[in-house]
Length: 139
Image 1: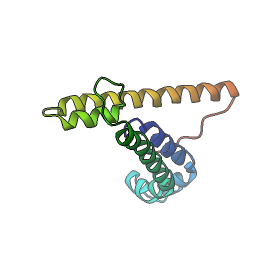
Image 2 (image 1 turned 30 degrees about the vertical axis):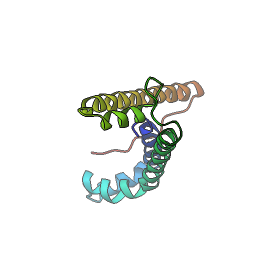
Image 3 (image 1 turned 90 degrees about the vertical axis):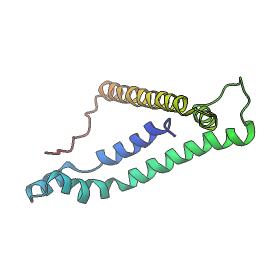
């Protein structure tokens, strides 16, 4: 479910922000390159956020699609959600193009929501006088 992508990204982002940049700096000073720091530090420490984001995305996708396809079915001319419209398009001959366009629309909406949430979050942080979390160095 692409609509739940912002929730997944948010969970992973919060998990990554919780990693102390000093750990990455210590690994870099010990000679670990960017790929080594990614594989040995960032991924293991952010795994709980990755799992939480994946579970949230799965639950949202199941909750939205499963109930609709089970109880409402597909009534032509009625309002449908994007997942149901994509599913319907894939069931029709030569519907792959429409399904791809709908998936692109879904991705665009998800990114728009994510960017809007980020701007609102930054605005609230400025309004409340909070500093953003320290950024982890990659290089």
